[in-house]
Image (tube, rainbow, N blue to C red):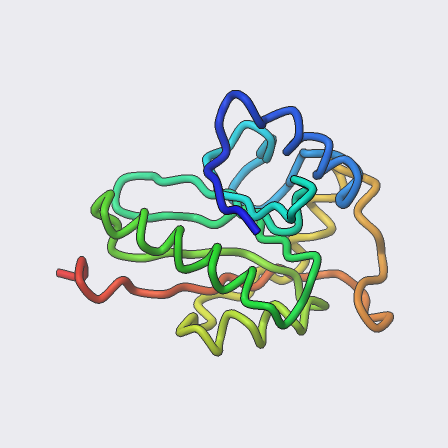
Length: 163
């Protein structure tokens, strides 16, 4: 496995990854509309240079927002490695916290992030209904048949930078 940052030479590969796994590189969240193929990030590739893990983020002032995190192989530390990389980058950039948004059906993500020090910060009731006005292909049902309705904001303070 190789870990690299997203750059101009691999952005097309990143765009194709999002098209294959998300339907498009566009991510609609309550914080904005993002083209994930243009964001800062890191990726993990296998021995044939296929992307098996990818994270994108934005840094605004002293806050880092993770926009996407994908790991195609669970339980191998890919997601944790990518998350740790972004936390390290955010710390070096002077961020005092990292936040992310996931949907109410994403129980695996909620478990994953809480185990790594993230806590629930906000519940945005009905936020996905608003997102569907912009991106109608967002499904009505998610993991385990759970209706996708709400966004959940999770936050982690970066201890070295908290004032």
